[in-house]
Length: 235
Ligand SMILES: [Mg+2]
Image (cartoon, rainbow, N blue to C red; front, side):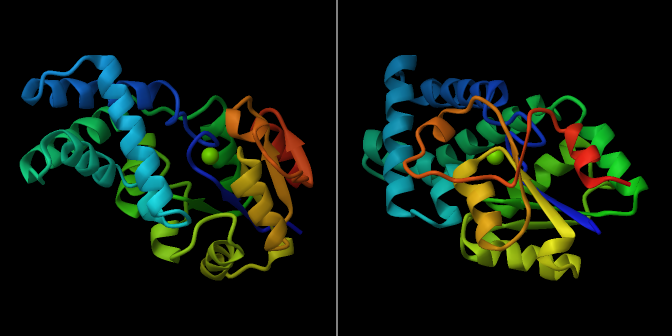
């Protein structure tokens, strides 16, 4: 019998990697170009370069997603020094704007409310830093519906490492067969759930990294709309 659901957050419950990210990046550009005149194209390139360096240097750790490090690296590249005031200002411009534009994906609130009604425990497991994910949960208005949060910053490993899922199960006081893991990424959510022996539910979207997968990962269930989760779980 299903007693809980583990969800990925970004691109599973909310749209943080689409428009909201673009708005955040635009705000960061405006903040950045005020101090250091730069064309948007060059800024985008600078951001991408800094991001891929940090991702490479911190592969497998929450720090690989830390925008603070992306911005610090950008400033190191253009100014060859650390400028704390600017790093903080650009960082806040990015996250304040992104979080302001953040919205739940269609039908998500209804599903979360229904899971609560059915007495299920809900945990979010995310590859990011905790402060940012806590802010997102508050903005999305789902603090009542979400019982637990585990981030890769907290776990010390990232999805698909099974340890992050075991930490979630521990908090939920449930066994792998008593929950579903729902996420949009084959590489992190589905592969990780499979490794932790948790029934995996792939929320299929058209994101690029699923198409670029080098090896085959097989979800136990595939859904195209989060509403389908309710019939999967049953009553
Ligand atoms: Mg995701």
